[in-house]
Image: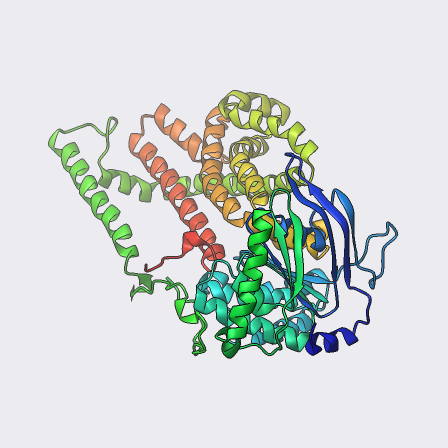
Length: 268
Length: 294
């Protein structure tokens, strides 16, 4: 782990933000999507879940979000308050594979949604949503409808919506998989900038070795059938990372290492 | 087509903002898009030709009035009998609108109730189907007896029975059609049932409801007319259907045609009104209301 990570962890102490203990997920059709996963997410870190399709990385991400209970094991948020049934209060934003915007609502109303649902007064919600839209580079598009936006712009709206509540954790499920490479690179850079500014914990699901190395401090490699964690290693390269890093020998080397681990995971 | 894109300076920072979908912009002639004019002018031209031929055929073959009156005579009758006919039209319209309103209220309310509880839907939906498939003509006499010869009320109930099913079934489908991931998102933010209904399911059901409304608008008129044929109440409070019956008995065929035309025109106007309402609600966001240049 490098210095940047250490600095980020100061704010939340040493207790992990999310602990995943022995988590398995068995679907009713008999598919064992996730088997015995142990994982800690520390405050402010950028983690990628890397693996082939069907390795349960999306299922794991959804369980962290509280969408679907694990069949076995516990996902806990030790630093958060718990309700009467012992369920932790979660503080997160979620970015789906598709932008998942409401087509009938303007860009601004889409970003406001989490605040509206939490009954934040409309005026305040509008202001906060407009600020977030500005942060993702969509100032001036507040009144546009999703169908008027390109794929990358819709994804930006989706990210702004996930961040509007200023969550501690941002979960992303292959958010840029459907975008062209140029747009993806741009969004990767913007995501790193937002992460550096806001200091949330990012969990990024991807099947791209290059994307995971570029973005994250830590890569968790998963294998399929059944979905399980095969490797968990740090990416020791300082931030800020930019185009210079993308073309550096160091990046190429890190990608080679990660590819090797992924290959081992798939072949095992 | 209206252009809803904001006049924003596009960022030139490597984003794909320039790859936004291009929405067709059309020239407007007298306030209507250029492509709308053929849709209006072509049927009118055909109509005029057909009416001309009709008038000519009646004149050429000397067809008597009580078999087939010409369009000119029908027009004259329409003007001459305007007060009687428009009074009846008003009565029919009142029943039509009341039935449509009742269909919308009951249809949407039932759809919401059904989609909140699977058990309610499972146990009640078949009876809604029974109401739909039973010909209204067959149950109208019963309804007249049950409403204690309150003609207006019995007509309203009949028209409502005919009109409410498309709204019910379309709205149910719409309420259940909300995007799965969006539902997950609402769940994630701990949205209440009411919030999910208001911010997600109702807006998602709007296009479905509106296409149901288009069908129901016409059906409520048909229901009102058919029910009156069965109830057949004469006197001051009688609608267009009774005027047609009455004209038939008296062999006043031009007047029969005039009443018929009034019903048809009313039906067309109802359909246009429903289409317009639908366009008003959907033009900003729904695919059906957007034209793209690809």
